[in-house]
Length: 267
Image (cartoon, rainbow, N blue to C red; front, side):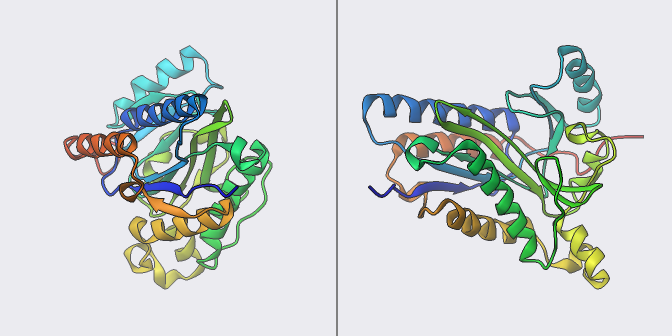
C-alpha cells in the first residue's frame, strides 16, 4: 500500500523555539492517538528558522544547564532545555531547521537508516554548491575536521520521530555559535554554506554569494522528498483542519513576538 504525501509547512517568520517544540509534541500526540484509533494521520515536515535560541540536550546535568541559561540569556538569546540527544547548540536566523514528524514503522525504516538519510540530505545540499564534506566520527555535517556546518538530533518514541536537523546557510548564526562549545566539540567551530562558498570562490563572499535561506528551502524540500521516497503536499492543501489550525496559531505567535538582537549582546 502506498503511503500518503508528507504534509509540509515552510514558515517565513523565525519561530520561538519553545512554542515550536510544543507544536512538535502536539503533532506527535495527534499522530499517536489517531494511529491507536485506526484513523488517518499525517506524516509532517516543518521547515523554518528560529529566533536566536540556545538549547540543551539530555547529556548535560542540571548544574551545567543552569549556568548556561544564565549566561546565554544575558547575551540576548532564548534558552530551552530539550529532550533531544546531544549537548548545547544554537538555532537562529540564517539557519534552516527541519523537523520531520514521521512514522518510521509504516515507512519500514530503521532509525539508523533515517539518521543516515538526514545526513545525506545535508551532504547533497552543500554538494549542489560544489562543496565537499569530510567524514567524521561525530554525527552531523563537517566541511573539515574543525568546521561543522550542520547538526542532527532526533528522538523516536512509538516509532514516531521528533526534532531533526539544522544547518547554517548564511553567516548570521556564526557569532552566536562562537559563544558556546556547540555539541561539546571543543576544537570545532561553526561554518555555513555561504562562508564555505566564499572560501572556494573568494569573489562570492557575504551577500555576493547570492545564497539565502529562502532560496535554500526549496532545495531542502526537494532533496528530502527524494531521500524519503515520498510525495509532498502543503499543509494548507492537506485537508487536515486540526494540523492546519495548530500551524496557523504558531505563525500568529511568531508574528507578534517582535524583534530579536541581530548579534550577541557581548561587550
